[in-house]
Structures are given as C-alpha cells and as structure tokens.
Length: 431
Image (cartoon, rainbow, N blue to C red; front, side, top):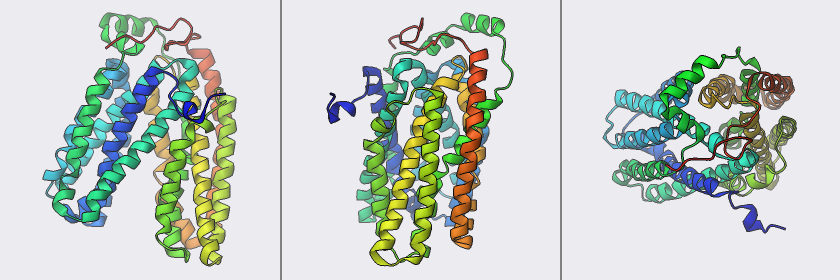
C-alpha cells in the first residue's frame, strides 16, 4: 500500500515540474493579492469604491479577451503562450509601485488581465496536452494542491510586511512578484514541448490540417456544461464573501474566527485533492462528484442559516462547519471539472474550448457576489434556501448538458487521444 507521503507525490516527472510552476505562480500572486487592499488604498490613495470600479472594468476586459486568448493558444502553441503570458505578467507587476492614480490603476489592471488570460489559457491547454491521458485527473489534483500551497506561502511573505505596516515596504511588495514570475517564466521554457507546440511550430502542417479538417457545429453541450458547472462554482462566493460577511454582520461569532475559516480551507485544499480525486475518470464519475458538491453546497447553506439564532461557541462551531462544507463542495466539483476538461474538450482546439468555457463560466458567476449577498442579508433564512435551491437546479441541468457534450465529442472528435501516453499519441519533445 502506498504511504501517505507517496499519495501526495505527483504521478510523473512532468507533473512534478508543473507542480513547481503552480507553486511559483501562486506565490507571486499570493504575495501581491494579500497586501493589495492596503497597497491600493493607503499607498496609491484610491478609495474603496474606485478600487472596486477598476477591478470591475478589468474583469469585463478579462471576459472579452478569454475566447480570443484561447484561439491564440491554438495558433501559436500552449507552451509559448504560457511563457509569454508569464513574462508579461511579471513585467506588469513592476509597474504597480509607480502607479499614481485611478487612470494608471485601470490601464495597468486591464493590461494585467489581458496577459494573465493569455498565460492562463496556455497553461490550461499545455497541462492537458502534455500529461498522459490516464494520469490527467491525478496530476490536476496535485497542481491544485501546489496552487493552494503557493498562495499560502505568498500570503505569509506579504503578511510579514503588513505586520510592520511600513508603506514603503508595502509599495515594493510587487517587485517580489516580478522576481518570482521571471523565475517561473524561465522554468517554463525548460519544460518539454507538448504535441500541439510541435504542430504550431509547423506552419505547413497547420495550414494543411485546417484545410482538411471540417469544423464541427457549435458544441452547445460544452457551453451549457460550463454554465451550469459555473453556478456550482459559486461556492467560492460563499467561501470568500457571503459567509465572512454573515459572520461579521449577522452572528455573535468573534471576528478572529475568519482566520480559522480561511486557514482550514487552505489546509484542506492542499492535503485533500489527491484523495478526493481518486477514482474519478469518466463523465459519469464527474457527474457523481457534481451531486456530492451540490449536497455539500446545500448543507453549508442550511448549517450557516441556523447560526443567526445561536450564541457563543455553538455559533462559532456552526459557521466553521458551514465553511468546511463549502470546502467539500469545492473539492468535489473541482475533480468533476477536471474530467469535463479531459473528456469533453476537442483535443485539437484546447485553447479555443478553454476560452469558451471561461466565457460561459463567467456569465454564470459574475452576478453571484451581489445577488447572494443581497438575498442573505435581506431575506435571511429564505435567502440561504434560495441559494441552495439554485445549486440543486444547476446540478440537475448539468447532467443532460454533460451527456450532450459527451455525445458531441464521440461524434466529432478524434477517436485516438493525441496526448502523451494516449493511443498513438506522440511523446513530449525536449525544449
């Protein structure tokens, strides 16, 4: 029997190197994100409302560029786009300390979202392309753990600076993200080329492939799958916004409990993905995980709504248990989503399909912070039950959508997996 340590180890050398990239990326992001509120308000001097407006504008741009970014990945190759996006992101971090007002904030924020989208689309396509088909889900779990570990490390580094509350130190925190980002970009260039990097390097092959491969009709099942799956992913809104606000404004739980909530979530999301993703390999398995996620989603809503009428230790326990239930919902839908990517995506157009899924998921989630907060704060228990009912409805609709996407994949996509380790698939090529 494999030991606990063995179960936490990546399944192959490529996955191990990808886990390092995830750790570096998240460390750079976490270091900046943790201190960003202080940075924007006290160092730059922006009001909270202006910060929110600027982030909203940048978010709209991210939505608009998601699909074009995916198309660029298919054209130029996932590894190249990932590396270029990572370099550009690191360079963009270097502009933050020199920002002087709202216009600079919006301009840099938009630039950052564009290059982040390009790099992220490349990363997602590369990961699916380079990993053996039978190891994709397990590897995704390890990468997810590495991301959470990196965000935690970045938060700890930034937290030391914040503890001293020296604005000059906080001003230069983004430069740490620059250094880590450039190290990450260098490491990416040393990774093996995936099959689609090789194809993208051959203009003649690409032209011939486009001329001889008929373009299938719109895959509505894929779009709907990510829309309804996106609604289940609004568990993150409960995790980061609604439950913390509920704790502060509607319960007598101590505010320091917030640290325990996020600490518990981080630890569980580092340790458990390798275990919660075991045995998940088919669309049926993914839909089963979606049902588990829905159950935990509903349980979190029911547990948390009762904390309004309790006092003392019982209140704290209920809020904490609700947060743990949301974490379970996150872990369950995460493993299901990895299967949807691996099984339902066109292997020849992973960038484009990734862009479509990002657009669909954004449409399904962008309204949730405002809507969930409103119904919970104004309707109380009725609001919590309404959110739970929405999750149940989305889960019910996800099943026929995923099956439709599965039938579409069987009818239109290649029968052989063109990824390393798949039937007839080429191996990764040295960089």
